[in-house]
Length: 117
Image (cartoon, rainbow, N blue to C red; front, side, top):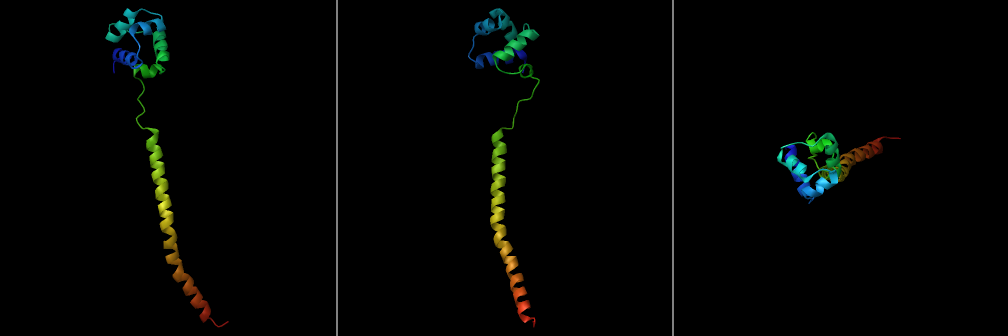
């Protein structure tokens, strides 16, 4: 997105007029208008002030960083799903283990009963 469009979008998103932004930065409303129409660009000092006004980094303002697209809730739901799967496996494994061990235990018992001690 072009800087001019980004500046206008941020200003409108924060419900500010060009005059309000200009007063905060200490410049004229006409300068804000020129920035938003792409006729001129803010200098580095003004970029810093703009980023502070909108609580974003200058990199975000200039479009140098990619937005975070993976929400935290996705990770949380994946962890929850894995925990539920682990719990289900534990519930299934206990009866299966018993089914496997019962014949072994009975065989041992029969074996020991047959030995003449």
